Amino acid sequence: MARLVVVSNRVAIPSRDNQAGGLAVAVRSLLKGRGGLWFGWSGTVAAQDDVTTRTIHQGDMSYVVTDLVDADYQEYYNGFANQVLWPILHYRLDLAEFSRRDLSGYRRVNAHFANELHNLLQPDDIIWVHDYHLIPLAKMLRDRGHRNRIGFFLHIPFPPPEILTALPNHEWLIPQLTAYDLVGLQTDNDAGNLARYFENECRLEKRGHLVYQTAERMVRIGAFPIGIETQEFSRLARRSVRSPLVRSVVESLAGRALMIGVDRLDYSKGLAQRMDAFERFLAVYPDWRSKVTYLQITPKSRSEILEYAGMERTISEAAGRINGAYGEVAWTPIRYVNRAYSRSALAGLYRAARVGFVTPLRDGMNLVAKEYIAAQDAEDPGVLVLSRFAGAAAECTAAILVNPYDPEAVATSIAHALSMPLEERRSRHTALFQVISDNDLNWWGEHFLAALTNDGSSTPWHEQLGLTPPLFTGLA
Ligand code: ADQ
Image (tube, rainbow, N blue to C red; front, side, top):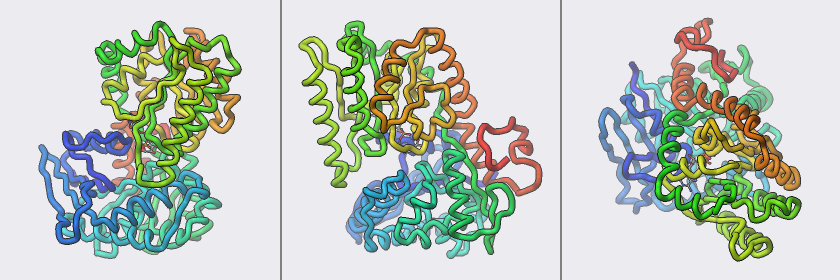
């Protein structure tokens, strides 16, 4: 079997890196038990003379990490990736801060990655590049002579061309996706947006559904909704709901219903709107006051970016204001916590929560939604209130889907979720659990790789592998 080389901005070496983050959790699980190499930034910002690239062997896996200098970190990571691509791909043109210097830093770091990989790659390696930090990488590897199968997966949304074309230099950046053999997106909607970009902006020749011809190769697009390790997470939740931490939280509720939100502090997660909706709920449904506690767990992220620092203040002020207005001596409506918790603590807390409150303004997938479903007790499950703008909404149609921009409607949905009869909760949960069991993390990884290595014969790739047809369309 050909070696798998995964490339992503950060490499999460087990036991050293405990950072919260969907990508880290997903890739690490995928590579578990499979020989391969994971290449990316070490997380270290070093002086120019101290930059090194080093290899760490663990079992049958190698982790190769390289450092960045401060200008790289500022321009490539904080700058172009997080202040230009992140907002624009999340449909937030208003928050993008474009500068040519950041774009040149982005190119420089991608070229540095390509140079380092050039020394590591073998001709039959299968290369899988992750996320918006590394869009030009395949083109840069092709320029260095590599003819390997190279796939790309975008973890965040891909907006319609009408939005994306507002990105300065999009005509340089986005067509570089055609240097990949396969470009994976989270949903059919994202895949359709990229297809429209290829057709309208690049004028690529269409060779089939989501298949395009360039001068050098056929490039295929597909929707591969990412999953979680459903069975493991479910087991973890069953165990940890009995842990001292979760028991003490449940005791502290004194019989009140728990509603839970778990998100990195990021404007895409819609936390300000979520607070507004909860406030509306308390205002419009006074009978629920003192009967429900909303726990929002939100570790800070990207605090060096001005926008994020401002958001930290806005959210904590909103929580304080609502608690001041509605709280009582024996009841605090919102518990707002700015720290990361272990997966096991989160799993137990999800299970103890009557409502999972997941209302991003825009999200590639949103793994918290899937974790919440996996953690529930099938006999007495909680209810997921989910934004229709999370990628997960395409699969999780049995959740209560809401428009996060409409606080009145979200408030009504909270009341609906809290008072839902057991039978309806069970039937919704059964449907949701089925979806996340059929399409778990392993399925996602295996199917992306099967599609990437497919020889292009007319037999659908899932049939070649003797698999049942996939949930998602695009490549079948
Ligand atoms: P993220 O934006 O990081 O991921 P998400 O999918 O919700 O968002 O994943 C977050 C992960 O971090 C979850 O596994 C969650 O449990 C964990 N986490 C969050 N808060 C935590 C806390 N306080 N303590 C510990 N762990 C915490 C990006 C995209 C998403 C996409 C994923 C995967 O933005 O849309 O779903 O990649 O593709």
